[in-house]
Length: 217
Image (cartoon, one colour):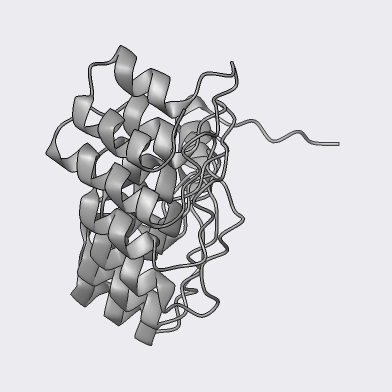
């Protein structure tokens, strides 16, 4: 029986082909709306994935390309499809503060699955609070997202806004919004430390005052 022998160049070529980025994903990560439309009109599979498990709408979201993401969602992109590190378009848009993409994802078919979690076990709301994305938080709080969801670190959105925020205007407003949407102000972290204690320890006076007014102990 003859054995096929591949030279180094041939092996590299085979590996490159196996790992090649689908044209739709490549156009999405560049935000090339014209090329995306051409490919979709020609029959490209809207949810084809690359070697990292990304579909095109996730690649567009990673690049912050709202127009590209909106087009893909309109054409049926799955905003729940997660890649190898558990990102999907909806979760990542929340984390990055891409409010327009979050809004488009909320109108997607199928809609976002609010029970899907990122690699830290968190919802889209938790990192939005962490990074101080006020407008994104406002939008997410109009949805069915669980305001008291606890991630793998033992933190809720409220705890993350305090622990990872800077106590400034944005994070103070986010804490106000969370309280207004019935965040549990006494739900502790995994070590039993409550939000008020964390705020006081960090010198976040305005936040601590709001927490006390809401019944925090």
